[in-house]
Amino acid sequence: MSERVKSAKRAATTFGWSVHGDGKRITSGAVVAPDERLSWPRTIGIGMQHVIAMFGATLLVPTITGFPVTTTLLFSGLGTALFLLITRGRVPSYLGSSFAFIAPLTASAGSGPAAQLGGIVAVGVVLALVGLIVKALGSRVIDAVMPPVVTGAVVALIGLNLAPTAAGSFEAQPLIGAVTLAAILLVTVLGPGLLGRLGILVGVVIGWVFAALIGDLDSARVDALREAAWFGVPDLRGPTFELSVVLLALPVVIVLIAENVGHVKAVAAMTGRNLDDVAGDALLADGLATTLAGIGGGSGTTTYAENIGVMAATRVYSTAAYWVAAATAVILAFSPKFGALVFTVPDGVLGGATLVLYGLIGILGVRIWIEAKVDFTDPVNLTVAAAALVAGIGDLTLSIGSVELGGIAWGSIGILVAYPILRRLADLRR
Image (cartoon, rainbow, N blue to C red; front, side, top):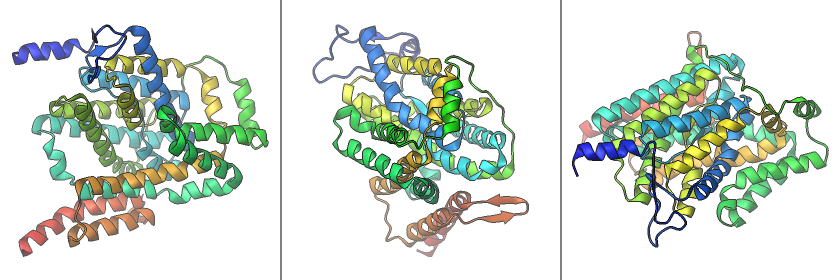
């Protein structure tokens, strides 16, 4: 088949899908490919599963950071649609709220929502530029600029930097936090199938119900829930740019690259299709979706591992199901009642959930090291990673002129600068 025919076929999958088999069942040993679909009722049902899978994480980010829930949900759905268009229907993915933004958004809360949105826009623009570079030079350029020792350290320090915040929320309502944490752990470990993958969402719901039963919901927020309209336009707002906030947010780019590239590789492995040529498009799409969210008032986006679990369980990789999920998110975004409900979640519940969530981000960094078999007997790897982690966990805060930078920025900048220099010096010494 000629390249022109292949290109036309790929472009066609953006707006149409061939029916897999009879549309009712999956052929033995096969999967429903991105450019295929089952019958529409089954496709809609699977799309609903994707909505459930992304819900807990996507809504938890605005709940923790104070961003408008419905606005975040709106740009999550729009970002997913944009991603599907730019990748020409070849990469099934949902773009939900990225946990990596929690740390810089929390740390920069004093600068105000507009400045925080400016940081999100900056991250999106840089990620989009990375996507263009990868399109031009190939996906191997990422491994050359950010080897696993660097990527793993930055991911780990972003998660662990917020450990004191999680502990503080837990201590505010320890009983509620303990019930939430116990529910998350039990459901994650013992829950069958998809339920086990929704451990955080289920745990938050159980914690909320427990708080309501013992009368520990914030009365002002409950009143706001009663008064909220069922239908309304999401709260849109624009960004401003402050250098200190932008520098605090930029390390998130490294996390988004790691998540995005990992998602593309995972889908390629599960579908048996080579997607290296679309890696740049995926990064570009994620960057543009994050930029759009920042411009309109939503939190930054990333490809969601939660939805990979749904695909692995169902063997359905159809992008048609993701269009269903994106449309559902956009529809829910126009319900202020829904947003007000999310904001009734008490501090203790958030504390129980974030003890797990922030730790998971830290462990993800360690997982990157393990999977890449990073050699920590190498003094360069050992020392730069050690210094970066302590700077992030200890929240090292120093000022350059009028710009104050915290541990995430110093740890990330330090390892990005120190690693190539020390690696070069070590190679010259040998």
